[in-house]
Image 1: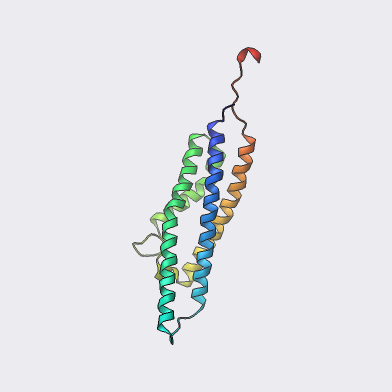
Image 2: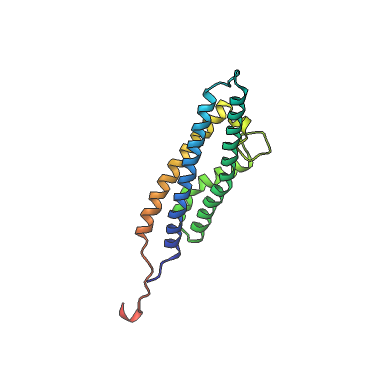
Length: 167
């Protein structure tokens, strides 16, 4: 019994989708922490506390920037694998997020040279809300994709080499 390439793609995507769900949870948690820092005004009486908060914001944004390219790369690998396996419906479901990630990579909502999450621009209220909504949407997409891949992992039968004389 040998698995087809499509079955392999779904199994690998299932495992990698779990990592994308982890990335999305990390983004949601980080943006929630940034949102709580945004709500609390800068402490004018204690400059050490204000400096510590700024370092924390820079640290969170730096960690978020490190997750952007792996997330985009993993999702691109999904699309390429399913394209090679000729799973057109799955490619069609993943294509909008692939196009959005490509657009987001080249046209960042920030005006900086940095990749996406610049501390000064992320702490803008509108940008922070946008990033939170984006993280929740990606979490929903990856969660639904996980169960979609799980379903198709079970539905695609392994290729069985049959002896033509026995058929």
